[in-house]
Image (cartoon, rainbow, N blue to C red; front, side):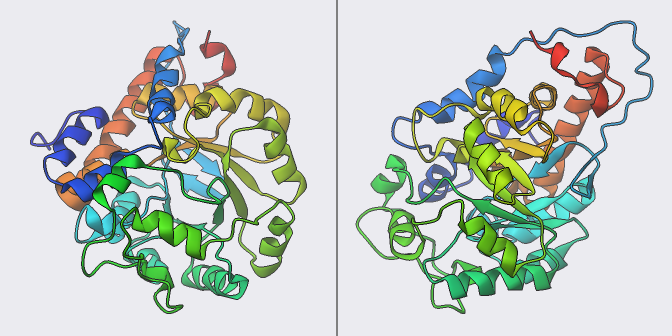
Length: 357
């Protein structure tokens, strides 16, 4: 695919040339001054690797497994909303690309495509990211739909009781383009963003979602589904422990891609304390700023079982649809393989804490 960018960082500029301002800024923006957005990336660069030599790396195996979900490499596709703003096939193209790559995809509540169609689009494992609506009956119905569709896990986002202020969206008066809706909620009459002189998504969150969610609600969610329950949006060790104590089957170390509380800690900085506190009781995933194969190794070394990739998938989708996403994942696979070889790691189990200074 010589016509496509050669690394994930170059995809952003290529996507900006194709997307309208409303869509590009929605995908790219962080909260307020976007300090955490930049910090997520910068924190990876500040970690220094201390590689091993004279290790037999003639054969390398990047495969892993997360709560029974096999992955051809320690990477999953993060939940990102409104993918049909990037490409007409949106979430369907992403699901097919995940299947080709042999990894799992997490589908967003705010998908432009119903969960049933996303699961049916390919053979990739699909997890479902959940926002809890104020109407708990509607939320329960959504969970049961995802389970019936074949979703293999539930990923509850907990860092967005209200939407962070994304000033680019406010300037653009962000709303969905004509013909696009919150597909999973159209039957409940909640498929459209409000038409406001601000961010339509911020208004949607304020009107529809439940800001009263607490740890006690994890038990309620566990009672309405048989799916494993992940909690996404955790950056504190004590919160991670409380998630485990209240029944979480896994924790996603995430600050919502720098889109919620600006100046919050970078996820790779938060990971070590969380991994130490959880102490292997549940698996950990990490998102935020992952752009290179070395980033993946750094996250594994600090205690994650795999990473989630968000914005690069959107950029790739905008540039070339399914082919673009397949290309982006192939780039990351090649970089992970090379990083493993050069760090002296024949498989993911050899990626240990002592690789980082």
